[in-house]
Length: 168
Image (spheres, rainbow, N blue to C red):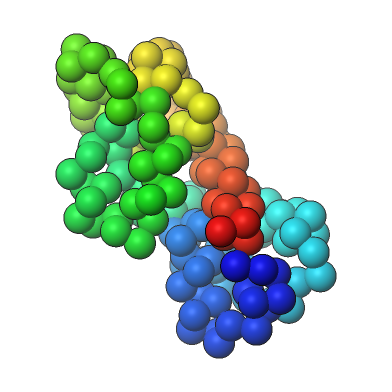
């Protein structure tokens, strides 16, 4: 999609496309005022600025719009609208050993139990082993620190997805 095409979408369709980039309804609503957008660089800057205007609940809403790292079944079912992007982002899991996949699943459950939301990492370019190491190291974080780290990771994902949206 081109920026011009994005700028000329109906409000409902624009909302749908932005939701594919970030699942926070608060962020999406904040972003609507920036359309029509002049260029991608400005749009990315506005997106980041608005992301950090969101509160923790809005961040957690965005996190909930992602499949767990390595959860292929939920990618296919629950996250159909972003499955292609998420699959590409998590491509490092495709060649992972069964042991690594099981360790990711176990770590994801521990993370959710401790923090109350899924483990978020910008998975693009990372192997499953790297993601597992990141997950294990972040499990040691204080909840106040971890929510900010997770928000930073979501911001990276949103930025990449906005770029993908305009490059598809």
